[in-house]
Each structure stands twice: as C-alpha cells, then as structure tokens.
Image 1 (cartoon, rainbow, N blue to C red):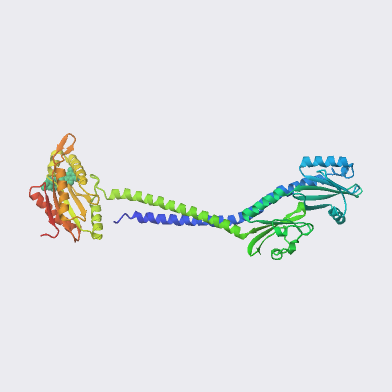
Image 2: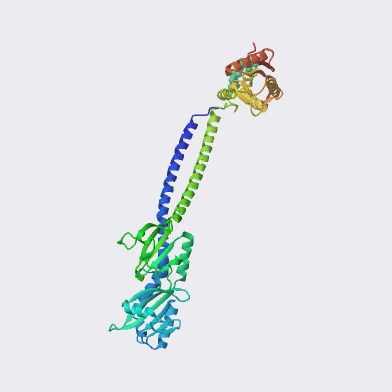
Length: 471
Ligand SMILES: Nc1nc2c(ncn2[C@@H]2O[C@H](COP(=O)(O)OP(=O)(O)OP(=O)(O)O)[C@@H](O)[C@H]2O)c(=O)[nH]1
C-alpha cells in the first residue's frame, strides 16, 4: 500500500543521522586509539616512574641527606658500643639498614649487630671504592633479600679518610611490583649502574651473579636501539627483541648515577588498542541500533497519526474513499478474487427531515458500528459517501459475500438505533457483486450499484447479488 511522502523524508533524515553518528563515533574511535596509544606508553613509564620514585629515589635521598649531614662523622672512630647503639637507633628511626666501615678501626659495624674486620677477602668493595676515590657509590647486594646499598665516603676536616657509611634498603617490594607489571602488561626492565653494568633486571638470564655482570652494550638490542646521545638524556626507540617489536625507553636515575630501561612489547599495546576499538565498535553499534529503533518508532507514530487523519472518515471512524481505493489496488495487485458490497440506509431522507441532520449523523455513526461488528478481520468497511457504505471482501465468493450482506442487513434491521430518548428502526439495502477478474473499482461498484438499485426497487431492506459483467 502506498504510504505518505514524509516517510521518504523521515528515512532521509534517518540516513543523515546515521551518517553523522557513524562519522562522529569513528572520529572518537580513532582519537581514542591514538590517545590510547600515547596513554599506554605514558602509563607504562609513569607507573614505573612512580614506583622507582617511591621505592628507590625517595629513600635514597633520605640516605644521602643523612650521610652528608655529618651526623655519622663523630661515630666513625667512636667506641664500638657507641657505634652499635647509634646504628641500631638509626635503623629503628628510618627503617633502613645502616653500617659504618671505619678506616681507623678497620672494622665494619652493621645496624643489626653484625660486625666484621675489613679485609680484601671479606670486604673487597671497601678497597675497591677506596681505590676509586669516589665519594658515593650505589650498588646491589644479597643478604636474605635483594638490597640496594649506597656507600658514602666520610672524611675528616683535613680530608683524611674516615671510612664509609652504608645505607641499605630491601628491594623485595620493588621487585614484586615490577614482576606484577611484567606478568600483567609484559613490561620488562633493566637497570644499569654508572659503569653501564646491569645491576637489576626482570630478565632472569641477565641477573648479576656475584661480580659477574652483563654490560649494557653487550645486549642484543642495544646497537639497534642507540641512536646517539640525546639532549634530554632519555630516548624511546622501536627495536626487535626475540622476533617481537618492542618499545624501549631510557630513563636516567641521577640520584643513583644509574639509568633504567623500560621494555614494552608493541603487541600488548596493540591488543589493548584492539580492545579499545572493539569496545568503541560495540558502543557504536548499540548506539546506532538504538537510534534506528527510536527512528522507526517515531516514523511509525508519524505514519499512524498521519494515516489515521488521511484515511479515516471523521463521522464514523471507518476508512474513507481514498483508503478503500488504495486497498482495492492492493488486493488487485496481490491477484486475489474479490467481492464487493454497496450498502445504503433506506429512506434516510425521512430520518433527516423528521429528526434533523444531527440525529441523521448519529444514525450513520451507529450503523457504521453495527456493520463493523459483522465483518472478519481482513475485510474492509468504508463510508463511500452520505449514507452509503462499501465493503471489500478479499478471497470471498459471491455466496459468502451474500451471506455477509445478509448478516449485516439483519443486524441493522433487528437492532433499533437509540438516539437520546428516541429509538429508530432502521433498515438497509445491499447490492453484492463478485469477480475473479476485474479491472477498475468503478466497474465493480457499478455492478454492485445495479444490484443495490434492484434491492431498493424490490422494496428495500434486502440483499441482491449480481455477478460482475452480468448483463
Ligand atoms: N445527516 C446526514 N445526512 C446525509 C449525509 N449525507 C447525505 N445525507 C442525506 O441523506 C439523504 C439521502 O436521501 P436519498 O438519496 O434521496 O435517499 P433515501 O432517502 O435514503 O431513500 P432511499 O435511498 O431511496 O431509500 C439526503 O437527504 C441527504 O441529504 C450526512 O452525512 N449526514
């Protein structure tokens, strides 16, 4: 059935809306991906930064400040008992491990009560640092746990060596947190000291063993990664590692004179990006479907309200002529056979003349209700004009159409119409026709009209049927 022209308009508006939504969401998806990419990289480095800041730099700053504040100097050659008490006190106050390696006494005292004599065999580090004349050194050591040590040289007023103060802290929390990053996000890390030796790393095969340490320059990726000195002291480059593309970011750790490298696999980032893309896609599809659903509802509402106005007879609520004509075309296009009934109220002029035009209108509306009650769902009842009604009965032969007309006639005849305190006996005449093949509606109506005319002539309140094309 042909609908109204605004449907095309509504579809056009819908199409434009869909295009706008797709473009907007695609834009957000793309910018999300781009944003995500940089966020991922930033997140990788910033979480590691805060971890390093919290676990390494802060305590090391405290340690440095303490060691340089000259508070150790009075104890560098004090009575052993005094040294022990002082170190124990420092350990409980700062929750760090302290030691004093005293040059005059050639003894090393630990804050946990241990002590040992300085010797090339037992404390090789002491002699190494003394040799190097460096006043500060950060290193790693294993007692029970992995520990970070900072050794700070102490001299007296004349510049003579008093020994070293050592401050150490456990790295177990740091290593645990980083192994979590490693499992969750695939990040690896490598810390190198001022000699470019690897001191701490998530790669098991690169872990330092005793004095045996791998140099940064010996790593397989280093030569590809290193693009020359950078001004900021840090750089991020893409290299291949174990047949995988990885981003390696260098970060200087000035307080320790170290550097560290974060190695993040590109695949993990790509997976995260695909996840973002998928989430966006799902949101986009859901939004689109919701929009289309809303749109179809709006269109249906508009259709219903417009068609109810265009196709409905105001007085009776029945289909009007326009609708009947379109329904006829539709039935015809479907190739269905059809019966048609024309029905006319008998002596309606008298009703009008006797009771007035308004009562006449009410009678027409009441008759419409009565006729409607006599029909099946697929039949079409319309007001053809005045007090004349039309019924289209698809797939109905002449005999059954005649029976329908008879049912209607009896319903009207035996159902007086009440108007206010009046009760009116109304009758109707019916002309029925049927055709398997038919052309224009007007021809079929013409045939039914002839039958109706005959019914009127034969005394009214009756049904006359007549095959289409019957002379
Ligand atoms: N109240 C009212 N009257 C209408 C309407 N449309 C047509 N009429 C009247 O219906 C009457 C139809 O009269 P006629 O066609 O002469 O026929 P009839 O009086 O019904 O007599 P028969 O059809 O020969 O039985 C006319 O008086 C019209 O004015 C309408 O919408 N409302």
